[in-house]
Every structure is written in structure tokens, then in C-alpha cells.
Length: 232
Image 1 (spheres, helix red, strand yellow):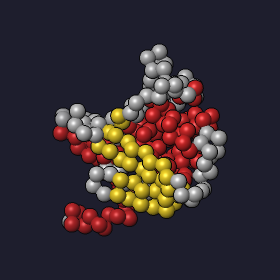
Image 2: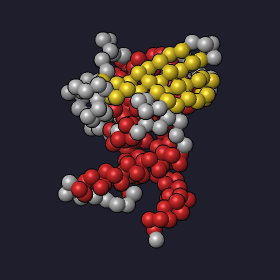
Image 3: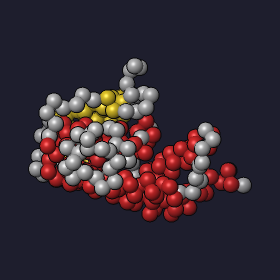
Image 4: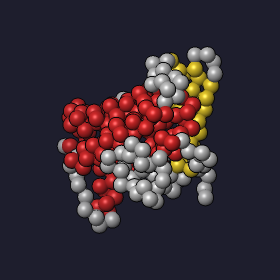
């Protein structure tokens, strides 16, 4: 196997302590490479608060794959308040990002990567965006990247002789499914977390999932003049 693609999130808290998490992704398919916890927490059982649109079978998948891979990070942040300040550095191979923000905002993109690359059939629809990860993205950033990813997927389907949909109706469906997972998975985190940082980080992700389809047309209309050279 080739060396994995790595993304490292480093958090420096107001007391000076630092915590760092390095995610290793298979370069071929962006699957998260991680050891399973030796004693998975009860809240990771697939049957416990199973997402309403989860296609996994409880007989063959005892644990939710996302919960397994999130359990260590949830444990680390279970005693944090979401609005506490933190310095976050995000290092990928090509560059490093840095931001002074709240724990809620700084934790959200890390949770998003793990949820997308852990093997959840619903969340993996967002997996291509992980390779071009943009932490601390605005709503406009996310819409541009998501629409681009979705239309690229249609191009690849068309190139392979499969049916392709060139409107954004399918994108709205994807985000509706993702939003359902976010909201249902939050029930697991409420069991695991003693304070609100983990849950509110996921709520922040869900806000984006809700807003993307609602604001997509408005954002695309606003940036249409940027494409004047292609629209003549």
C-alpha cells in the first residue's frame, strides 16, 4: 500500500495544552485507516439510536463504523464547552491552515472527515471533497465545492456510459440524506458527551447540510458573472 494521505488537526487550548489528531487515508479510495478500539463504547452499537436511513445490517455490522472511528475523539472532547476558544492548525501535504476559533467550529471539520471516510454508505457520497479538504470553509466555499464535486460525478458517470443528471435535484437529495444522518447521529453523541462540544460540532455540520441546497441557486447566481468567458 502506498503511503497514506494524512491530515493532522492540532488544537491548542487556553491553558496551553495541545492535542493533535492525525488521520491516515488510503490514497486509492480515501478510506480511513484506523485501528478499531479494543473495547468499543456502548453508544457505538449500530442498534443503539441507529440512523433512520442507515442501510447497514445489524447482523453483519455490530457497530456503527462512524461511531467506532469517532469514539477516541469524542472521549477527548467530552468535557469541553463548545464556545471555549482554541487555536487550530490543520496540516495537509500541500499546505497548512490556521485559525483562532471556538472548539465547536474547530472540531466540526475533523468530525466531518471521519464521518465521511469511515464506511457509512450515506456519508461517503461526500468523500471526494476530503481529498481537497478546506477547513473553516464558508457557506459559499462549501456550495462551490459541493456543486463542483456533484457535477464532476455526473461527468464521470457520463464518461463511463451511465446515466447522468445535470440539474442539482440529486444534490439536494444527497444533502437530505446526510442531514438525516447528522441529526440521528447526534443522539449517540448526547449519550457519550458530558458537555456540549461534540454535539454542537455536529450541529454545526448539520447547519451546513441544511443550508447548502437552500442557498445553492442564490450563490450560483451571484457568482455567474465570474464565468462570463464561458457564457459568451
